Amino acid sequence: MLTNFGWKSLKLFLSKKQREETKVYRLLSDTFGHYRSLVEGRPVDAQGAEIPWYCYPAIEFLDGLELSGLSVFEYGSGNSSAFFASRGAVVTAIEHDREWFEITSQRLAGLDGFAIHHATEAKEYAERPEINDADLVVIDGTHRVPCVDFVTAEIGAGRAKPALIVFDNSDWYPETISRLEHALGWWRVDFCGFTPINTYTQATTVFLNPERNIRRLGPIQPTGGHKKISIEELGQHGKGRPAPQ
Image (cartoon, rainbow, N blue to C red; front, side):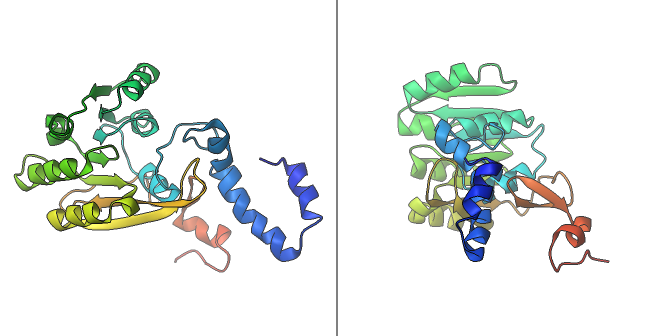
């Protein structure tokens, strides 16, 4: 990460168009914290706070929701667990990797409302009773097809009624994501963009239950780097976009 002095020095050798292009890099590197996550080798924002290893647009969407008091169930665990729990959610995770299970158990032991279980066999891993109490389900681990089949079966039977399902790396699982979409019949939103650590883009898909709603933190929209701007401020900050009357 270059200091402000470093950026100013670099600009002396760049054309006007190249100087404009550096703003894009700085937004990703400094504002979103991508450079810091790359150096530390873990998903964190610019301030070092833990964030999910999802694409940045999906993180911004989730960060705009009122997560406090919600029940989150995760297939997989890690920084996303800390992200949800730090925002007041009750988080339960299932992890197949014994070493990562031990690391996560110790690292997040002090978080209120966090519980993690270990299972390697597909049936024990996928068929979790905690699904039935979940407001938000994250599919981001192993055994994804059994997980999708179980979650959709529980929803179809009326035993589970989550408001959201988050499926990470959906670009890697086109058949599985289509299977989930067909079974649910919910609204599907595909987020795509850069992720922490990685130097390429990925997709994170969110399914929204049309019969449920998670309250937003306010009438605001993300503007980049986990910053938010109210609609009234658009006239001040949005070039050529006057505030609505």
